[in-house]
Image (cartoon, rainbow, N blue to C red; front, side, top):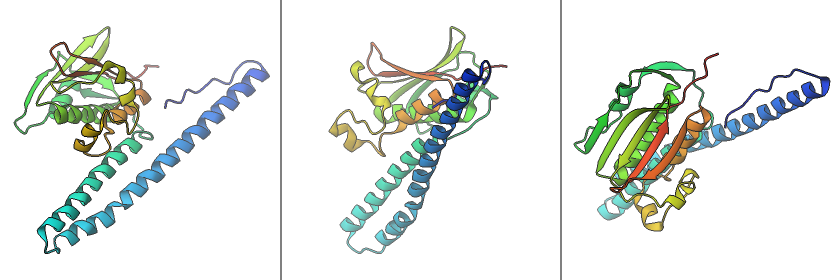
Length: 239
């Protein structure tokens, strides 16, 4: 998803080639951006009839039917919200800024009594693309708390890169599916699909956000069980 501008220098043939490549990149980026914005607008507009269904459910006397209508509307609302986040990840723009990384990640941890451990690793002021990073990390934390009842979040400095590790004690994911789960709408199995709210777009959304801004996302299964998600924090190039 990154656009790399090619310098239009050198001989006439090289300049023409570089110019054509830049124009092609601009057209493709514009097409993808317009497509994402169009679907995002459609998913937003669909919330109006869903809101009417939720209101109508309160007027249905049969409690069982009212519950079915209300539950279906709420499920579709969650799906649309998940889809909007995924589509927004394809055209979100951001400028580098300095944030307190440890404080920002700590603020995203659930406060509902679930077991969560956090280690800031000494991270303080870090220059990065704050909004894409925090949106990605929030999606991954939400995913971890959905499949595990114990979550550990740690920030480490590895070879000059800040890395955020999110470890849950859930069922984990077979290593041969690590690439598959980056694809939108992929489900490991039907049982998991039925229990997962939305489209299961949390990991693909996080992946797109991180890759677009120079970060990375990787996985490993912990020896003691569960999945470990590793986020390489995007580091803007200093010119």
